[in-house]
Length: 111
Image 1 (cartoon, one colour):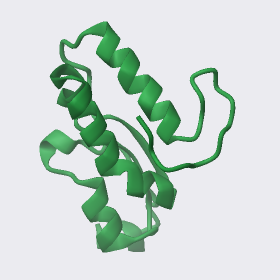
Image 2: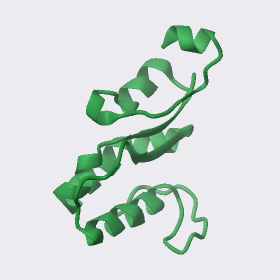
Image 3: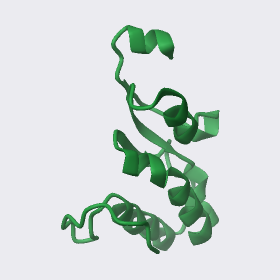
Image 4: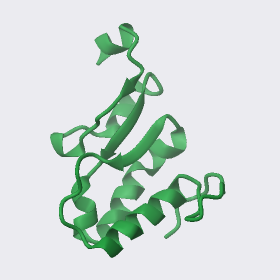
Protein backbone atom coordinates (compact mmCIF):
# COMPACT_ATOMS: atom_id res chain seq x y z
CA UNK A 1 0.00 0.00 0.00
CA UNK A 2 2.80 2.51 0.66
CA UNK A 3 3.88 2.01 -2.96
CA UNK A 4 0.36 2.72 -4.15
CA UNK A 5 0.29 5.94 -2.16
CA UNK A 6 3.68 7.01 -3.55
CA UNK A 7 2.36 6.20 -7.03
CA UNK A 8 -0.62 8.50 -6.58
CA UNK A 9 -3.40 6.01 -5.93
CA UNK A 10 -5.83 7.74 -3.60
CA UNK A 11 -8.84 5.40 -3.46
CA UNK A 12 -9.20 1.70 -2.68
CA UNK A 13 -12.19 -0.27 -3.94
CA UNK A 14 -13.23 -3.03 -3.58
CA UNK A 15 -12.41 -3.39 0.07
CA UNK A 16 -13.55 -6.88 1.04
CA UNK A 17 -13.93 -7.58 4.76
CA UNK A 18 -14.27 -11.33 4.16
CA UNK A 19 -10.78 -11.31 2.60
CA UNK A 20 -9.38 -9.82 5.82
CA UNK A 21 -9.33 -6.17 4.82
CA UNK A 22 -10.27 -3.89 7.73
CA UNK A 23 -11.22 -0.26 7.06
CA UNK A 24 -10.77 0.66 10.74
CA UNK A 25 -7.23 -0.74 10.88
CA UNK A 26 -6.31 0.82 7.53
CA UNK A 27 -7.52 4.25 8.63
CA UNK A 28 -5.50 3.94 11.86
CA UNK A 29 -2.38 2.96 9.94
CA UNK A 30 -2.61 5.29 6.92
CA UNK A 31 -4.90 8.10 8.04
CA UNK A 32 -6.42 10.09 5.19
CA UNK A 33 -3.79 8.99 2.63
CA UNK A 34 -6.57 7.41 0.54
CA UNK A 35 -10.32 7.05 0.55
CA UNK A 36 -12.10 3.71 0.76
CA UNK A 37 -15.36 2.17 -0.39
CA UNK A 38 -16.89 -1.13 0.75
CA UNK A 39 -15.42 -2.93 3.72
CA UNK A 40 -18.62 -4.07 5.41
CA UNK A 41 -19.12 -7.75 6.14
CA UNK A 42 -21.72 -9.00 3.68
CA UNK A 43 -22.84 -11.70 6.11
CA UNK A 44 -24.05 -9.21 8.74
CA UNK A 45 -27.39 -8.72 6.96
CA UNK A 46 -28.18 -12.44 6.92
CA UNK A 47 -27.34 -12.68 10.65
CA UNK A 48 -30.03 -10.23 11.74
CA UNK A 49 -30.42 -6.76 13.14
CA UNK A 50 -27.99 -7.09 16.05
CA UNK A 51 -25.23 -8.14 13.64
CA UNK A 52 -26.13 -5.24 11.33
CA UNK A 53 -25.91 -2.80 14.24
CA UNK A 54 -22.54 -4.21 15.35
CA UNK A 55 -21.12 -3.89 11.84
CA UNK A 56 -22.35 -0.31 11.43
CA UNK A 57 -20.99 0.57 14.88
CA UNK A 58 -17.63 -0.89 13.84
CA UNK A 59 -17.27 1.36 10.77
CA UNK A 60 -18.93 4.44 12.29
CA UNK A 61 -15.64 6.13 13.35
CA UNK A 62 -14.26 5.80 9.81
CA UNK A 63 -17.46 7.24 8.31
CA UNK A 64 -17.30 10.19 10.69
CA UNK A 65 -13.61 10.71 9.85
CA UNK A 66 -14.57 11.13 6.17
CA UNK A 67 -13.27 9.64 2.95
CA UNK A 68 -15.13 6.37 3.39
CA UNK A 69 -18.30 5.07 1.75
CA UNK A 70 -19.58 2.03 3.66
CA UNK A 71 -21.31 -0.72 1.77
CA UNK A 72 -21.43 -4.49 1.64
CA UNK A 73 -18.22 -5.85 0.24
CA UNK A 74 -19.73 -8.23 -2.28
CA UNK A 75 -23.02 -9.68 -3.49
CA UNK A 76 -25.43 -10.19 -0.62
CA UNK A 77 -26.07 -13.81 0.40
CA UNK A 78 -29.60 -14.87 1.29
CA UNK A 79 -31.06 -12.46 3.82
CA UNK A 80 -34.61 -11.49 4.79
CA UNK A 81 -35.78 -8.48 2.81
CA UNK A 82 -36.89 -6.78 6.03
CA UNK A 83 -33.36 -7.04 7.44
CA UNK A 84 -31.90 -5.64 4.22
CA UNK A 85 -34.30 -2.69 4.50
CA UNK A 86 -33.24 -2.24 8.14
CA UNK A 87 -29.57 -2.25 7.05
CA UNK A 88 -30.24 0.42 4.43
CA UNK A 89 -32.23 2.60 6.85
CA UNK A 90 -29.55 2.38 9.53
CA UNK A 91 -26.78 3.07 7.04
CA UNK A 92 -28.63 6.15 5.77
CA UNK A 93 -28.89 7.41 9.34
CA UNK A 94 -25.17 6.81 9.81
CA UNK A 95 -24.42 8.77 6.64
CA UNK A 96 -26.49 11.68 7.91
CA UNK A 97 -29.51 11.20 5.70
CA UNK A 98 -33.03 10.40 6.63
CA UNK A 99 -34.77 7.57 4.84
CA UNK A 100 -36.50 10.24 2.75
CA UNK A 101 -33.07 11.48 1.68
CA UNK A 102 -33.02 14.80 3.53
CA UNK A 103 -29.64 15.86 4.88
CA UNK A 104 -29.48 15.69 8.67
CA UNK A 105 -25.73 16.03 9.22
CA UNK A 106 -23.62 13.61 11.20
CA UNK A 107 -24.93 12.72 14.60
CA UNK A 108 -24.06 10.01 17.06
CA UNK A 109 -25.31 6.76 15.62
CA UNK A 110 -28.75 5.93 16.99
CA UNK A 111 -30.83 2.83 16.44
